[in-house]
Image 1: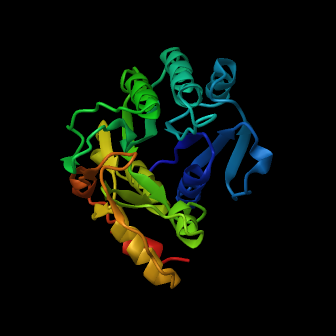
Image 2: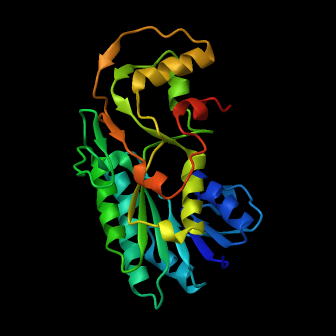
Image 3: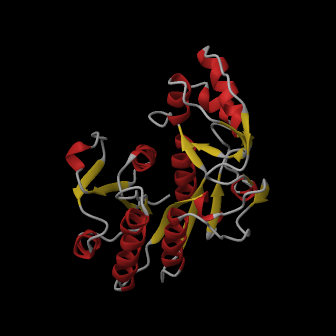
Length: 278
């Protein structure tokens, strides 16, 4: 495969994990974020200071090099409607403007969330399911997706379910602090290494690219069952009633059938394999 010039717009954990796979495959990788000095050094990755919500910064990134692939991993500036608007919608609007001015067509992979779904009754959802989020964050995420979908270049949107793994241990901390609220609602998750590896899978196998993927593991699980498993692992006693669902994030079961159809093999097919890691 030819060497690609890859721009990671947003250089957090998922981008860094993807970058390691990309440089090992001899691609040229640039990681752009506000504070690159705070990021770990990865051999072969050039880091650049740039603000995704600043159109001039974006324009400079694309004028400095011909970009074959852009991987967009954004975060909210704060956990509010305005924070999600500034963190997702504004950068995507600027990106749309800058890419529309280019004389070539980079491929864009955009990491979104299953928060764009509003199902609350345990329904199965896939890429064709209706999106009617009832949260402000979900509405802003969907608005940003529409901007990516309307780009004048090829794009893929990855709707990731709850990302977990190293440094993402909210449930474990709640359990250890005795703050776990048990709910009888369906939850879905994907290990951070699987998100990064699936991004790399699409880099390696362009024939499997679709406009939209739901990125989740094989096993939607009731929330209280995950807590029960964690409690066994930690040797913690789990008391308290199981509250009826749905929880604050609804109750749905995410199908990964399309992801599986690309030949991608999950590193962590369920929460049990993923949570068994230290």
